[in-house]
Length: 285
Image 1: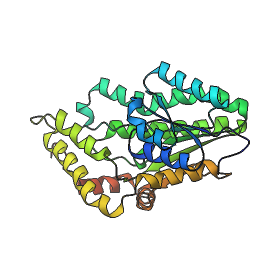
Image 2: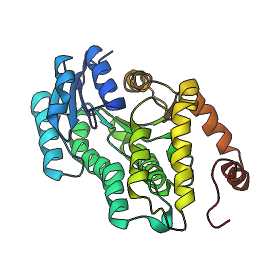
Image 3: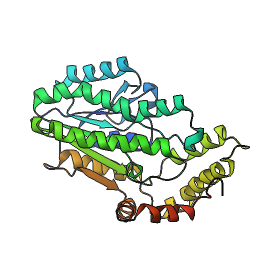
């Protein structure tokens, strides 16, 4: 249900595919005024046909973020709901990480969402109402070897959300974290391709990188088929979170991810390391 007394405008990043596309399409069908964004607006033609407004927005480009927020505020007075969904995964052993690539990872997964949040907050405060949904990952709580940069960016967004939630609650603004686990998108395919493209096949982490890629591909074909959710599952969780009067601070989806996250929470770090050794070879051993 769209709130009648508040701005119905939803600004979503990363809508060219996957979770962002499904969320934009679903919320438009529920009556929200959805502004779907992507780095290339021409990729959003299908969403326009489904009732969404399409805008170019690159979370690494200040001007495009300002222009998108100004457009929504011109149409509706304020952004009612901001969904920070855009992001990607950078894999690799920490020793071999390219620092400019890691900075770019944080620019997309952390600094971009932070800046976009700063841009929409004045309008939300004036309206006395707003919802900020940060799409992190179950990887924002759980860390696996070979993905330190990605996990670090998602952990950081989780922490930022916790601070922000306290800071803006008094202005009538809710901050909600959505943590997708295994979802059937092309995310794993892209990560595996990235690992293969940049791997040093003669380096000290060569066999480890091969194992990380193989594990991701195996999970994508096996575990995903059994336990993964669909992008629409995340979209429905987002809809609930922005319409319920008192949303939870975090939603983890699908149910298998919730159970896995809960098990990890109570597992000592050394036990987790032992479990990881059953999944990946240890470099240098």
